[in-house]
Amino acid sequence: LILPNHMAHSLKREHALGAVQRAVNKGFDAMRDRVIVPFAALALRFRYLTLGIAGFLVLFSLAPYAGGFIKYQSFPNLESDTVEARLLLVQGSPFERTRQRVDKVVKALEQLNEEWSPEQPDGQSLVQGYTVTYSANADTPELGPHLATVSARLLPAGVRVTEVTDILDRWKKLTGPMPDMAALRFTDKERGAGGKPIDILVQGDDLAVLQATAKEMRGFFRGFEGVRDVTFDLQPGKTEFIVITRSAAATALGVTPQTIAAELRAAFRGDTSLAFEDRLGQVDVVARLDAADRRTIEDVLDLNIPGTDGALIPLSAVADVKEARGFATINRVNGKRAVRVQGSIDPAVANSRELMTAFKTDFLPGLAEAHPDVSVSILGEAEDTSTTGASLVRNIIIGVIGVYLILAFQFGSFLLPVVVLAAIPLSVIGVVWGHMALGLQISLPSLAGLATLAGVVVNDSILLVNFIRERFGQGIDIVEAAREGIRDRFRAIFLTSLTTVVGLAPLLFEQSTQAQFLRPIVASLAFGLATATLLALFVTPAMLVILNDIGLLRRETAEEPS
Image (cartoon, rainbow, N blue to C red):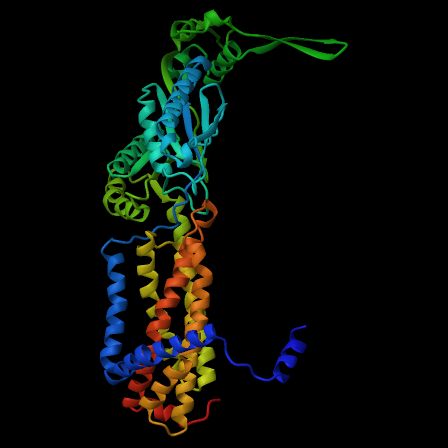
């Protein structure tokens, strides 16, 4: 369908341009001849100054990052539409106590909804609904009546005017302190590719040392503004009796640790004393001490242990018993005991990269000196960033080298590809200032957008370089060839870049949760392309004229491209 229409159109007489089209062309030509070409003439006349200004702008654009005005974070902040309160009481806590704590959290959520719903568009309810789940907590693998999660569904991020960090802070404040909690964390439901901002794995042999180290880490991170909900997974468990054998007395009375363990197991957990068959199969009768006879240390010490001669010996004669609270779970990683310290941050206040840098420089050296047997691994967002960032940088370098080799083969020159690739650092100017204008931080998606941009911005420079080389090869003065190139190629360069930027623009201002991950990519492409296109019109021809000044351009163009 397309080819026949094109052929039919080519056979028709040319019609006069419409009034609107004539006005657009007139305005476009006026901008080109009165603004672009005169500025290009100045850039060519003061070409060394032009190149110096371009270099200054690139360095100046990196200053906000170096000065901390714009920071790097692994992944953009994604406003979640679900928030949770995760409750963890001490193991052994009755369900009634857990329910009371849940009621307090729910009451605070309802109060928050009453306070902030009038501020939402059309007075819509901020909390659209909530659910309570008992015996479940995403922060721990435990199960039992001491666990609960309150999950609230919020007004969508693109509609509400309240940020999720403010909601969590207010919910926590309204709930108030609950000292009998092992852990209480208010968090949004994690989404996106990144891990937790704070995620440290501590490994060693002594649980007491691991617990002390985890508490020190928690205190260290809590000292930073914007850090919240720092916890570790070595939580207290149920009360237990610890039996310590007195070796000399046990040997003299013919009692072994294995015998003590077997009797304790039979007394507390039970032992099969009788088995019989009925129509349904074998039935086991398990006997153990009555609950009233195994509650205190005295009950345990009165337990009789058989010696090698069959005599019954009180446990108190061969062992000591003490009451203590153990740990709910003991985790192992690669065979070593491990404790995991995790936390979240308010991205508007704290930066995970800066936190990890401070952790490495200020905390780890002292830890290595105090506890040399303890090893620390940084996981979560920092690990993801390191892995993904290294891969991204490597691929960007490979891509730029590939573009250089293609251009070197096409131009038959090793220097002209450098002139073309100069558009890439020029695009960084737009990337940085575009992010600042939109209130975005530099993130991995931003770098992915920059990597994509590297293959786009060189197209305009290729058009310019190729046109100027053709004119220069025809014997035209290099400055005049550059001026003609800017004038004749401006429309094509401007329109291709403009259509791309306009097509990307709607995504820049999209506020839905699904679009938040795309905005840094689009910001890099749109602002970087716009800046590189404008500057390349002046910088690329100036670089070609400079090459001619030092005698490199003429020597290279004397040979036919291979």
